Image (cartoon, rainbow, N blue to C red):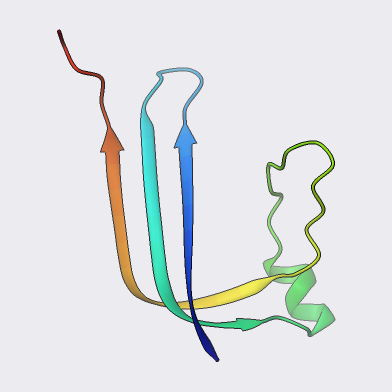
Length: 72
C-alpha cells in the first residue's frame, strides 16, 4: 500500500452550495473484477478523460470545507 491524497470539489447547481473535501490515507489499486464492478461509481470527467484505475483509500485524514461567498 502507498499513501495517497484525493481531493474533490462539488457545487450544487440548484442552491449553489460548494464543498471541497480532501482524503489522505493508505491506498491500493483495485484489480479484482468483482470489487471493481461493485465499488466503481460514475465519475464526472472532462471530455476525453479516461478512468482506467480504481483506487481504494483507507482514510487517515479527512478534511472538508464549505465554500461561501463574501457578503460584501
